Image (cartoon, rainbow over all chains, first blue to last red; front, side):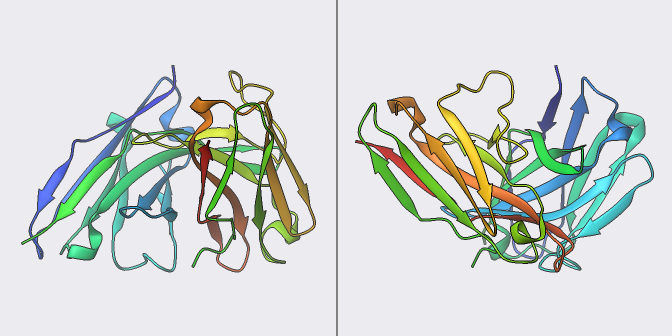
Length: 121
Length: 111
């Protein structure tokens, strides 16, 4: 079974750093792009960026460029999303998702269960 | 404001048919990029519902169907059931942004 399992919920203070993870299993981790998607409380889905674990090629949404860093460790089939200095506005649920690329089409499946990040003083 | 526009909410009685629209532009849906749909049940992660405009993954009932025309797409749900109550999101690719875009989501209420 293809699965993405994310790290647990985090509660942080403004200015702190954070790295959350997404571990893939049941498929060749290095052969599929992994995306990160933000969902702020009561809001919709926003694509943040994407990484190809095979060579760590990374792309960012203009809205998130410079705000977060996406990385991967293919030796342990894990992708990461990190912040160097959190803000209260980073409070959200963060999902990772595998990109399927087939016949020119690109969609996300499956999704991780989500990591809730709460930033509060 | 999302790049793809969806109605905030739709509703229908059990057994009825509802549709959810997704309107884009010439840099995404109108450019020929495919549309995909996700269902997000309360307090759960999104789940793929329709891929490639009108294809259902294994396990998705044939009550769900998708279509695309011009700069818009639609998700149709027939024989509405209480368990269909969820948020639905469309997704495509945008060449101007060089990235993936989502609709703002539509909350389906089963009356």
